[in-house]
Length: 532
Image 1 (spheres, rainbow, N blue to C red):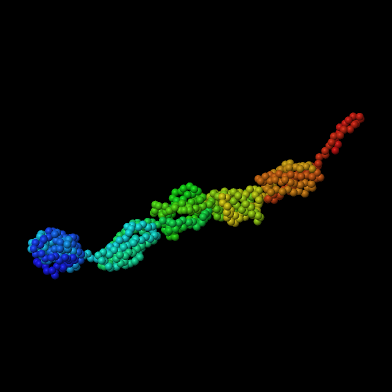
Image 2: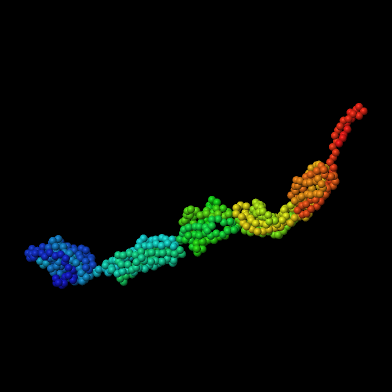
């Protein structure tokens, strides 16, 4: 089949450059070879035909199309001085493989066998691609991260692309800074997580839809358990068994937290606890809690292996237990004949300092007065049985304040006990029981209930001084001062004590006559004699 010049452009394309050769009907040269480059192209693209020995030549061609019957093109194409023709296809060029099998100078009749093919394909349809980088991001719960997402047009793609994200884990959300996006543009994909977002590794798929096409790109999101950010106590110290406190952990809502700490400078095992929805943990100190300074140096989420340093370190001091209350029972006892029980809230094992008044007098302080024992095993409360001695000062004792002797702060209380005096005094002996006028005699009075002893008498010239009780109530020593003018006789002495009074007798002897020796002559002899 011969192809007319008019139809050639619809089959193999337009010749971009032609050089019409001079017609030489005698001794015309022939082409020696033919090659095509590129061998494959799309409709609308160009290729180069190179012919050996074809400078300025116009060709006739024989070819097949997709292996079909041979066809002939006359007087086409015309080659340039380099033996080349630049041929462009169009959208009307039939797609398939054109195989050139013979060629000749159009001025000749003989054909030269060749073998060169060009395959024309339909141009690819417009398309687009999505890309996001980096391939992976890692965040803690409660944090956000982002990726730039780029839309690249292919083959003249011009439609806008709508973006969406899937695979977002529970507790996280995804958003795009721009949507839709034009080809050549980009948007930022931001993923925000909550403090309770699921943890682990997740694949996020970014899907773009536009121009009837759907394309996607994937990135990895790793969500680690969140870490605490800070640690604080609402108070700096507390008394064991008395006080409560709470700690607040930044970013710690609902978290199980591990804490590294020392007690009085000695490292302790890691301590763990679970925080409430506000990131807090509340605790009331036990009576038996270890005393001293707790220094917290690092913390972490229990689900993590890496620690968050606390700088500066956070400290809390546990002080010795303070008494919380005081009660006394019974309300009255007799000196030397019974006891009362002092019960102190949070006082087990505590040695007390007390402040008190007697009969409304001035406040008195007694330190290290009583060591308390636990009311019962494991009880934080303490008690002590107090036995007022026989010579304890009678009266109403009102306790106004108490404290642990290891502490400095006083705790106000109000409890009282009345100590009644013992029975009246009984004198069983007086030694010596007599003295001469003009003498000072130290007398020991023995008996019972001899507490707070004072002596009195109506005997002229007899007075008393240096009264001393022995504390056990069974003796007192007194100096009897007997004037030289005191009459001789038996004086009645009244002994007064805390429980009453009694009398005893004391003999006053006349002053002894002092004789002096004198010498006289009697009958011419010297004689010694004694005279007053």
